[in-house]
Image (cartoon, rainbow, N blue to C red):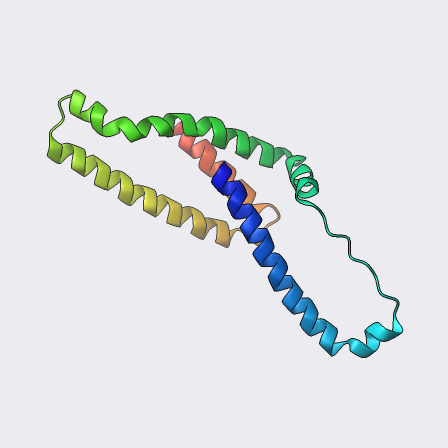
Length: 140
């Protein structure tokens, strides 16, 4: 959660810088038009206003809640090596479990990204892909 918030702040500041560059180029090209029109002040939303606005979206709230409570079983997975050793699996079996979990996790993340990009043109397409991933992970 904390790392996600930090990355959101970094991404927002990076996107803001890119937007300023585009606005600067636009300002240079349209100097004559801007001098004729009265200057408008652009209201910039604060971080809390943005967070409040996004938190009003029900699907976002559900995805965040699922992420918080869905992470609890995955935290247990850090002890999977000890559990498998305790259950008398051989080291070779444990290593093959770890390798296959890493490979399938990587493929799943790649597939989720490809599907998200493929359905991005639909209204809320990425949200539906994320929800399908959550529901599929719950069932399987």
